[in-house]
Image 1 (cartoon, rainbow, N blue to C red):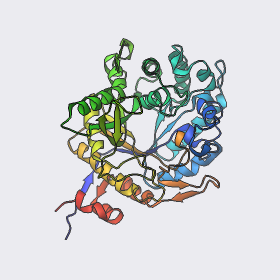
Image 2: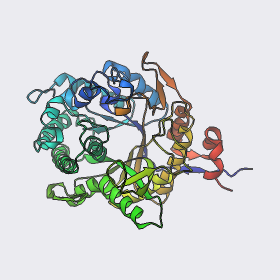
Image 3: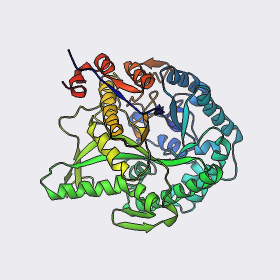
Image 4: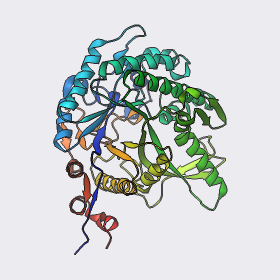
Length: 443
């Protein structure tokens, strides 16, 4: 008879999914990504976000119903700056009311909102002034944050100031396919420094308005490992990437000192401006030092050969990297929220294994009494995946983009069992992912 056990999570653990405004709302036509989508060759197959999941048109109601009915007790969503402040001198009170209604909808379903204030998109007027290259942008961001928090303080006490500032910088300023499509290390550093300042100003503004608020960032943690452990240059370049991509921003908002590549900056006002650590984890890279790399960055990256790959090869299933990321984040001495984790999988073949194996790693960390407070799966429903358009399907629920029909994938029921029982049980694993049962419940 196979062994049986149940891996329980702490009482009060937050179970949810994560979304972002531009990816689900639809008809976001006043931000930099709208401009980017309309430039030829920027998005795979020329895809557009268009109606997205039509949340601005009200489809959030049925999606929240689905989340609540399947046991989720929290949801992470973002506010679209360009809706709230369409021009430098105008606030849109109707848009604020709209967000108030959406967030009240979470309360009515007994779901805790985690609200992100900046998730990759900037208003066109900010973009045209140079975006985060402009030293005035942190001040503009602080004004916007103040407006939003004043409006939503009765409903929200968990805030993410900036989502994945490291991805924003690498994507837009080191050749990664995000607007404005630049490739300049000094400018990347400048943008990162301004985002540190913007976060710090937002943190102080939130706490002025709401003393009991808990404020953090959501950082995309990438596991960089040397491809050849015996070869020191591989270890050096992997450590260099870890510092620049993973550690630079959280170090800056912990100690007030930004260290990125060869650049340094003192930003003392940013010290200790984080109440929790938001960790996004997806995959691991094996790094080889390569002075002849076509990327111009002296390294090449590949996925572990034994790892399962997602639909388009965009991600590899390496659950051990989740535990590694949590161990690293723990060193900042803060409670941890897993603010994103998931995999693109239109057929829902890999997702059940990916989800179960990653949550098992989360449970391992919890079992060491690490202060992990919640898990937000990316994503609730298929959405527009930035420069990759509609080619990747991350949703527990599928989406027919043409008809807006939602498609229930088996992972909906898997995640529901986990959320409703606050646990990962042998019975659940046996039913949904029997092929990995022996790995999680060895005899």
